[in-house]
Length: 176
Image 1 (spheres, helix red, strand yellow):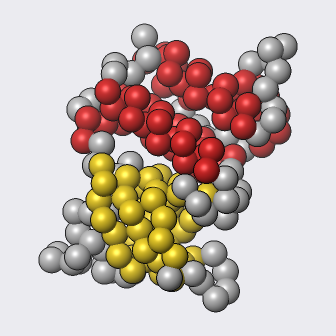
Image 2 (tube, helix red, strand yellow; image 1 turned 60 degrees about the horizontal axis):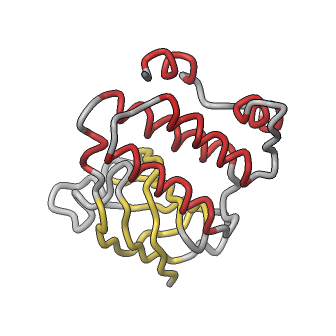
């Protein structure tokens, strides 16, 4: 069994009652876990695993592939303030999708977790602004070794990774 602290960045249905949860963890980087009964009413995981929750997780590593088995979760921070407005959720969601699309699964780098956890905490405690997204992109480009003052961080990330999450232009239009 492996124990770690992580933030939930993505959830996908798995059968009738399960979820595939993508975490950004302190020690294991991006990790995908299968939570077989997470959506079943009365389940131990019900209410514990939701988007942007910070949790302590216990999982059994996969013998093959990258889908591990989630055994237990302890909720540390639900970040409820992210649900206070649609703009909070859109900004948090875009940052999570950007991180997932640029970081390899299983890259054990604590900096990824520090970046997304800090960014989500900041968005939860302040008004969503364009400067927050631009700073997040800059830090992400720096961590990837792509930042140059001569090029915008977004363009550097886009040039290197090519497939970027949709919705950035619309989000920037809505952010003050």
